[in-house]
Length: 300
Picture 1 (spheres, rainbow, N blue to C red):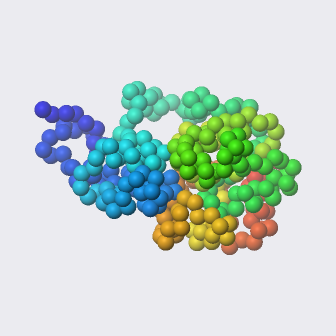
Picture 2: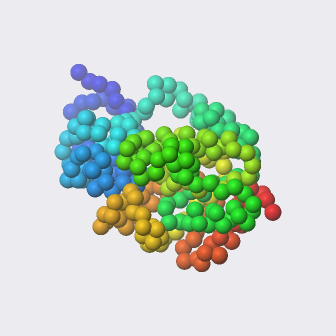
Picture 3: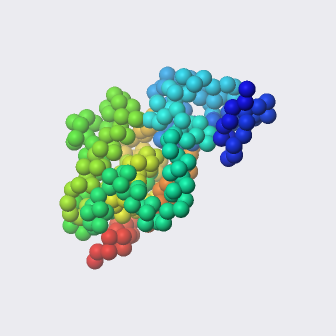
């Protein structure tokens, strides 16, 4: 019996010609990308999922068959779903119809659909407010607070808002609820921040771009600026803060950081503006961010 499947970009029959090794290689690549996107080292993923680092390494390299149950454990440990790791997977019964409609839609119709589905506020989107995105160590909190004081705006850190709403520290949230639980709380906190009136400068966590719904909600409600730096500077600033989460002190932390940055760059690049803080003195970096904020929000 032959089964029809969408694989490799075209509809094919599942026959003896099906390239299992190619499928496993693509599956491993998807898992590796998902792990990097979430900012998790193999060691951290192994601790959270209960699977060995060796098994994860073999699976990411496309070696051997993969158990569905073990894949389920891995994807859940990364705050995702099983189908997130399946090559060319579609997760909605009406996906083909939605895809065709989106292909014919105007940019305005696409924006309206995204706003409707995400619940973004029109009033909030038109307010003078800016969100800072980027990896830890880019200066979102330090520079954001300085710029907000200069402009007389309210400054918020999304992680602090999560802690205020839950009464639990971020580290404990990850330990108790995991990546998936944290992302749900992050989206809820963002929705509450959006409803606040007045000018606002928001510093977000580095991984917010990894959650499509939350990130679209952010993009639809704030002007966005990507604060970026060289990987070595990101790492040094994180070390200076005494925080290696989610690296867990792994010896390969700098390599993991580079992989995270590489996987997230296309998402960060969706921001309206970019400000590179590499090698800049604090005041110079703050002035560059201030100029970018003024340009985004059209304020003097």
